[in-house]
Image (cartoon, rainbow, N blue to C red):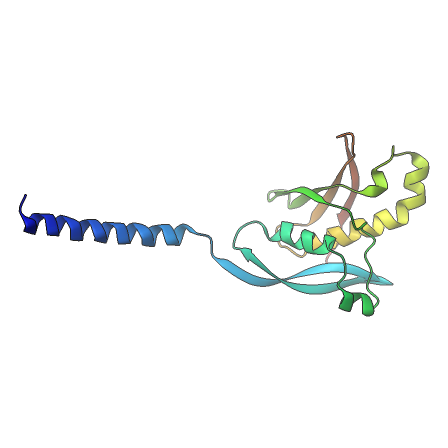
Length: 171
């Protein structure tokens, strides 16, 4: 092979490699910053906007819930905001059914770490209801979610439907 053919093949190879690099770079999801609302309590539900950085994927609902589970910041606490979601609550998963416009977050919750009995649920029902509302409103800010069914996983692996939050637009 002559050096001209070799040089020509090298140039073509480098061009192809460069185009391959461009194509690979375009496949990476874009990253963006956006504001999401998380809902805390101060006599009533109060939305707080947090700026998050996420890839442009379906992860925004998950990231918004993780922000909510962090609880109010020190500044937000000074404004009197509280959360009735226990501090050690973890988000295990979240599924969104776009056809039904429903979200199904699965969480752990220390209120249910013991055997759940009627008395425990009655005693904690106001707090559980308000915590459900915080989660529901946080997810319902997204156009793909109208209803939220919160699933709680107990330590023994069983799941319990903790609550359903559906808020009409005029509330």
